[in-house]
Image (cartoon, rainbow, N blue to C red; front, side):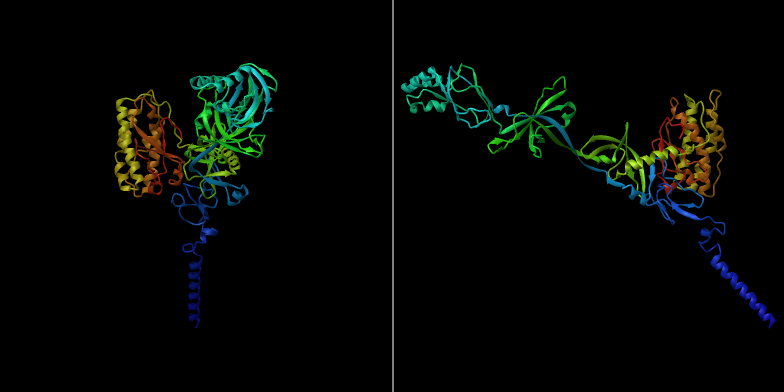
Length: 573
């Protein structure tokens, strides 16, 4: 019985141990990463290395580039997107700042060109009536300025002895003599209609009528009843106000926008709230040398209301010329922040991240602004709240820590002219370095092990050719130390070795691209190498054959296009 009890106790102890291991052991429960009792760190969140503003509370891939999210553990800061040209906002901050965005589109650019000028009468319908012969104004039928008259309406009764004698002769003659007398009467101021009706005119009539030559408004009356006048004296002046001319000055910089036939909206202080629309009918080809401007004419209809014309003669008026440019890439004007010579917009990169982007401006419309470079159609730019975001970006840049250098080594006293053996050594070395980078970019370990075999020989030849008493390249020693490659069992180890090798190689060769007769090759850079190779600087460079698109050897297919070319003359990152 005693032995049986002992067996039961042993079985219970074993069962309890199994239960504890199954429920609280480190191998099967995710709780160990949370409470840290087993030594594992707690994951705070997951973050995209390429787009650090994309975060998640569980593993996954970046919603923008598709790259696997990187875990950020307790005690780590993660990637800071609030520095440099990025500003990261929470959803609450976005609402408090009233952040609004609009899409950059290819659309017409409309501009309203403000102009100012005078409203004048139609010069082609302006008439001055002068006395054809000496005589006396017997009676005025129109005796005030502003009177509306029609063509052929009697303006005055005129007495002239010579005219009266010619009328009597006309009635008595026939044939050619009568015809010749009629021509003389036209020269004395009678119209053909008046001459044709002379045969019906009473013989005791002593005066002749002065008729209005056009319909319009009497703008000047220079005679009174009983006044004697001489040939050539001005009697009346009539202007046709049914069509008015709005004339304004256009300057040289405005001329590309102005064309005949464009519509102009005209307003005048004398008629508040009313607008008149007309079209440009004439542009004076003669520019004023002093003001560098020319006159532009707009024809306006002038309606007759209650016996008078609405638009008065020689009024001051403002005009608005609406111009529509062809479709261009444009954004709302409120999206552009102009700070001295630089213009910037903030682009919404999703997930609460806004990127400061420098743009080149074109023409300015009323509500839109043409963008020549900097953004593309479809980008969403901030139109409200961007000034506050820009202030935050300036603060971020002010407090940012200095950028970590790409490598601790620097070049000193680079060669200014290369010999032929030196050029040949560089060409052979770049071929090997390019092949190694290509193999890693393709995630091909076997190819890397094979292409790295000649690295030791080509590196030795390069170092031997570049060493000279006149020139010291500090990174040559580092390059010699990093040239030893052997068959690697995994691609991560190969990338670590290649990273050390390529840092030294670019430090040696990049300055030599500026040497006279330097060989052609390209230098590319990745700004997040530390995500692929722990403990490495953020930036890493590698060599490629000239003219080939950059392919990232540190990430391979996971982020193949994370590469930016370093142009000639850029020695330090």
